Amino acid sequence: MKRRMRRLSVLVTPQTFWHLARIAKMAGFGDNLGRVIDKLVREKALQMKAMEKRPP
Image 1 (tube, rainbow, N blue to C red):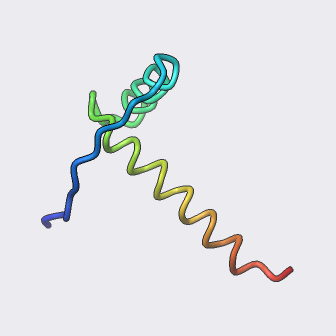
Image 2 (spheres, rainbow, N blue to C red):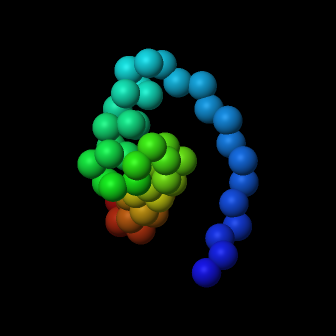
């Protein structure tokens, strides 16, 4: 399955880079930080969608 991909360049602090690299290693993504960013954004988007559906 082909995915539609876009290039993204990000500038992060050394601490954020360290955390992203650590998450990538724990998730088995190797050194692919893009997959980590995708995963974090997807999880946050699902969380926000669930909050929108919740009655006030």
